[in-house]
Every structure is written in C-alpha cells, then in structure tokens.
Amino acid sequence: MPTPGGFPLNRRDLVVGAGACSALPVLPTSAYPQSTPVGQPVMTEISFGVNGRTRELTLDTRTTLLDALRQHLHLTGTKKGCDHGQCGACTVIVDGHRINSCLTLAVMHPNANITTIEGLGDVDRLHPMQAAFVEHDGFQCGYCTPGQICSSIAMLDEIEAGIPSHVTSDLTGPVEVSGVEIRERMSGNICRCGAYSNIIEAVTEVAGRRA
Image (tube, rainbow, N blue to C red; front, side, top):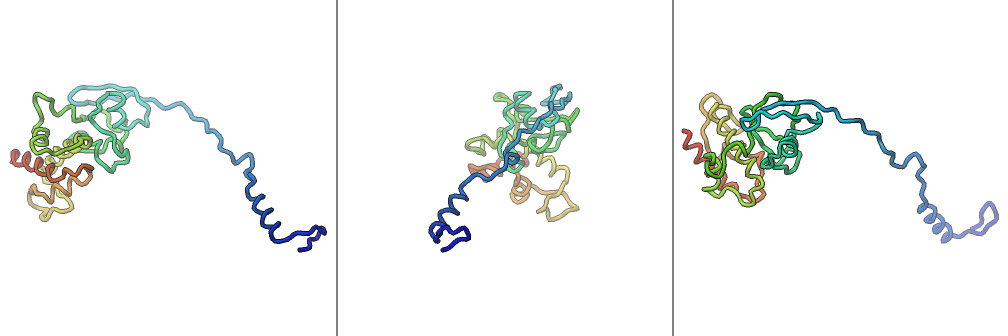
C-alpha cells in the first residue's frame, strides 16, 4: 500500500501500529486523581435519655444514632447490618416509635427517650417479648434479634393505638393482631436464618397477654 511519504505500508503493519498506539497512556496530567482537602468536622453537644439514663455526648454532626450508640456509648446490642435501612437490625425505640437508627443522625434527637435492647431486660428478668422469643426459638444466629424484639414491642403499641397498616381491612375499628398484620408490620425486619414462623408465634403470645 503506497503512502504519501513514499514508505511502503501494508494492512498488517497498519493494524499492528494502531494497536501499539492504543496501548499508550493518553491521560493528561490534570486527569489523574487529585486529593481533596477535608475540613475539620463540625462538633456539637447532644443530650438524650438512653435506657432511662441521661447521656451527654460531643459528636461530629454527621454521626448516625446507630454509631453514637455503638461507638460512643458502647451499647453494641443494636446491630449494624446493611447500614442502608433495609434489614432492620439497627431498630431502636425513640419516644415510643421504632426507627432504623442507621438512617437518622444523633443530633436530630435532642432530649429524646431512646430504648435499645439493653434497656428492655436482663438475664434475671427478661422483658416478656424477650422471654417469648426464647420460648418459641424465634432466632438462630441472633444477629437480627435485638432489632426484631424492639420492632415487635413498638409494633404492638401501634396496634393498641389503633394505627392501621396496609393490610388492615377496617380503618375505623380496632386493629386485630393476626399473622397477616404481624407479617406486614414486621416486613422491614429481615431474618436471614428464616425464623419468621417462630417470631410470629412469639409476638402473638405477647399480644395475647396484653389483651
């Protein structure tokens, strides 16, 4: 194949040359990763009640409630699972409502009353829900159990308050505790061991005692 410069060039030489050129680095210097300066964290003081005791902390404003409980107060019963609010392992009770503590900042709850699994009972005196989970074998590995128990307790409070769910058939009457209601309301708490049927039995038993 003749070329303008008079040098012989065949198809094979063209393909080899093009391949060699494509392997050369072509990024300009400005395209390489550059370090980004990071400012000092903004710290703030926060006070809230945890398991009946007032706790005062100085935290980075970006600290989640989950990390405040685990890393700063060393209450490691509340588990960090997905850290995206999808598994429910980090469920705690804040002012009577269950929340995913990984999705909320600690500074959003000044003077709140927070209950974790450590505040429900102990080995010598279990909370009724804890005792029911043990009796009905509502756990295997136990990693999700703290969140399951906290969520179950708050769920029964919701039912007693007459708060309907997506599957409640009568929105004007009292909400009945049923397997369907429990499954719907506990759907945000995942048990990878699959102990769901035993969990439902445990919750049903405690609901029966409340009735």
